[in-house]
Image (tube, rainbow, N blue to C red):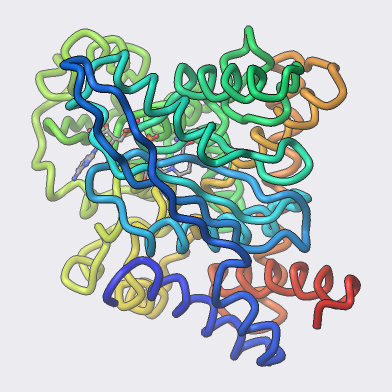
Length: 411
Ligand code: NAD
């Protein structure tokens, strides 16, 4: 596969074929409804002016306002942004979120900028993007942006419009109208899917062995949640190392160790393990929660888990997917497993529009029932069509977008 955009089109075409989708609708979904490329001039600390390239892709808005993150990365490509907007259309439809798919990005390296330069870049993005608000297109955070960047985006938006409108920007700090549980959402959803998959396979939760690749926002929260539910987290890795303990690692202690040292490496509650071998750990559930394309045709034969829960986006290559399936390994696809963040973003918008702020317990409860519904819908579609859960999820999502387009008379 050449790039992420081609990979997205491959998944789309595969689902279209399995559901006999009208060519006209496939054509519509195969290109973003609107893609903009623009530049942002930023005054640097040394007085010079630097021009940065930025993008915003709005894949389709038949199902609601386009929504989702803003990626800031030095090697960002327009294809990546287009692909991510298509994935968001699918993810929103899978989770029953009334939104279309959006994605934005700036080609820049935040680690090479001062805080002031970065703030001017983020504010410049909003000025040049001219976002149209909660009912049209809602930017959120992604790699290279966090709650502080979203606070600047909201402030810039509100300075331009002269009004307070928290629902116009997602992933804000709670103090500015963000949702409780925004940080935990994706990890919680991953854990919920793992529990459901184990139940479906008839596995008892107590003592079930879990290995987690990536111990950041998603991996650590999912591991902590499963640890609390009695699962044994037998191996964890991050970019700096890996630890294992066949009796189960103490996850709160490992989180504290990671916060202090920057890595899981050197944790005294386990032994050092091979970072590359994490995906081959003897366990029941494997959670890749780091980067894409880590389960490949080269290592899929050695995956020892019976369930893979895709917390990262695209951790399994298409060839590996086929191999895992032929070995009877159940894969809970990314568009279902990591949709918790998108679901709570939708909650954030709903709370912003209604000024009705929910407690952490309420957010968690609503998230659980929403992600469970998405999981079951994808599973049912997979069974109905005799395909993998990934394809089932894509077919179900495209079916919903198709209906919205037909009802609007677009096709
Ligand atoms: P993060 O940056 O907080 O954590 C990433 C973790 O992966 C870190 O522990 C890092 O050390 C580790 N890592 C990176 N490369 C690695 C490698 N080669 N081997 C082992 N570990 C490695 O990121 P995150 O927010 O936890 O996101 C993790 C994945 O989940 C990404 O693929 C992201 O796109 C996806 N995702 C995140 C969210 C979210 O809400 N944060 C939502 C959907 C999908």
